[in-house]
Image (cartoon, rainbow, N blue to C red; front, side, top):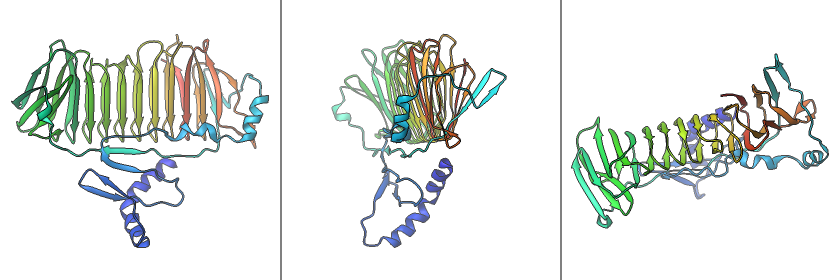
Length: 387
């Protein structure tokens, strides 16, 4: 239901904005700019929570407190007092499918706060005067460097593919588009490309080769981004898909694209509005933070000592594919979702029965309970199964 309301809200913006303008003549209007080509008025809509500011003038998505971050505090005082007197005990599932799959249904009144988003930046000319090194070419360019760099770029459209090499150079090649002047500028250990004097890629497919261990920083309006075998990655995108493999730390924020992250070695911070995410971590102590409005998460890996996985969504489904060597505590809260247990969790704190319904949270243990998994879904469900 929440997902439908949000979709209807965005589809109704043009009509409602016109009506609001007529009703509110003489009142200061709250305006939100989209790059320099579009200007949107966002009216208030009865029946929906207040929509936080949406500023599409800089490629920056800010989802700092998405929904369930405040939801644990929405439990009433009586619930908290009852918890003080409740002892851990075995919990009977609502459904038991032959002993292999157990289903726990939850229900809890929740409040909702929608995410803040900041997308887009002005496409100003490149600051080549301050560059410490530079290289130019027609359709491609190569810049010699001393070692790993931070490659920073923007894309309005087009695809970006980044790979690591053993060479001490940065190379870019543009295909699927008419050949144009390309420049690479170095600012210390940061390298930026320019296309006909502009900082933003507007079309075509850009292949980027970086020294192994380099970092990637990309802001994209629409277009896919892929990266393999490099260091830390920071990506902001509106609608493109993102595929990462064999990278270090990941900081990814997106609106509607899907994300696939494989064999990631460092912490993962993934915020999305409607995109689906598939994450596979390496090592026994992954650090994963997932936040979404209607997107879901498929995670696979080991969660043992020092592991921390936090996943929050409004209507998306959370699927955890845990390695048998895992050992973790699980905390799950939901308004109307359910926990589907396919690994025989030891559920130690019951969703207490009130008025014939379950309250919206439970705790469980897998193995010795050394790591920590926190899952929060307003109307989405949680599935825990073996990898």
